Image 1 (tube, rainbow, N blue to C red):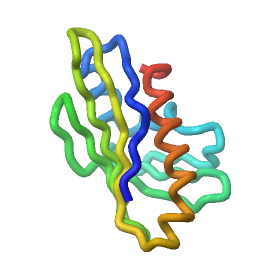
Image 2: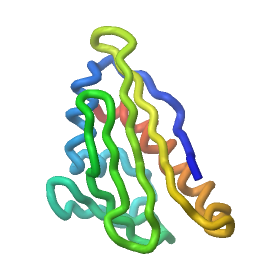
Image 3: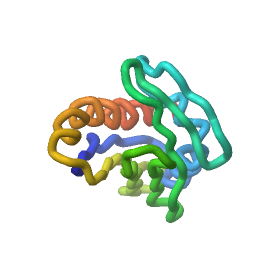
Length: 131
């Protein structure tokens, strides 16, 4: 399953956006209002839970400055990744799009598609507000 957020534009350089997103502590500012828990585990890992959903642990998996950051599931039963692609159409301008990818059975995919789509959309839309 692959889900993509809206591409958002910012009046910030790709490097500024990259630096913000590589600090996993900043994801607390991007979380939706229905976040019931956010806990920083270490400099690369955080745990969060949305109301009515199980806790999820995300860990930085790879980075390519200043264009790509990949977070992945750290433990748990589901294996997925959340990738931020940062493009730089002009100096001091950037565009960010989030992509969620995971291999789920049809029943699980059907159950999580709507909440995950809404989640990554909220994260993406909050990026320009917080940087």
